[in-house]
Image 1 (tube, rainbow, N blue to C red):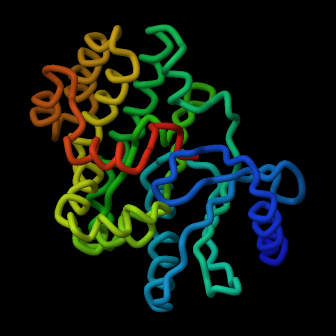
Image 2: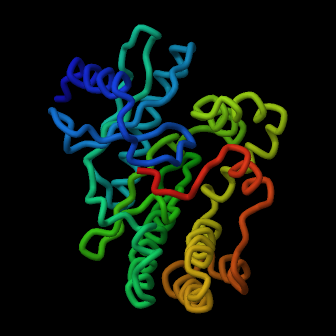
Length: 280
């Protein structure tokens, strides 16, 4: 069982030292890995707290259900725990996750490895996407998946997924749209976002669509390695037919050329200074 007092002390020491984060992506938090101590083999993600205790309890239950659903669907994941940690400012959500080798992160590998290797990683990630969506119907609730390149490591040829927050289960589309604002680490997003709530809410739509998650993966690969875009598009169309026939027609229609990010999303990224770094 996790020693929550030791976890709280680890977080306090990290914040006091303003330690080096291992990711600067910062949609919802800046993950860190302690250099020493009982959590040196873990990545810690501390999220913003909420004043609504019932909403926090619902979030904890949703996170437990989401991790269970991902595992049940056959999604490879590192050991993951969710805690509502008591602080001077109230309870805050904390995810503690088994650390994966930095050398296994898919995005940096996609940037530097040869075409054959990157296609192998695409196949590994695609298999996880197909496995999830082919199982999703049995959960009987609104459930989504965000299998972007930055949310995978590839270890011994297996794509390991590690993005469990916010938990994409049970919440309605409008509720998830509000969560994207409530838990944003960027104050500017929380201030400006409500003025563009409809567009912020739309960010999530790809995560709840089987064909769009595959198209999103291929689009990211094409943007990372434009010199290989044709090969990635060919792979994506063939993979959709082979492994996701229920959604092949829609997926293939999105991969006739390099998929583009929606204009409002690229605008938000620029506004917030977000980079496509691994969301470890």
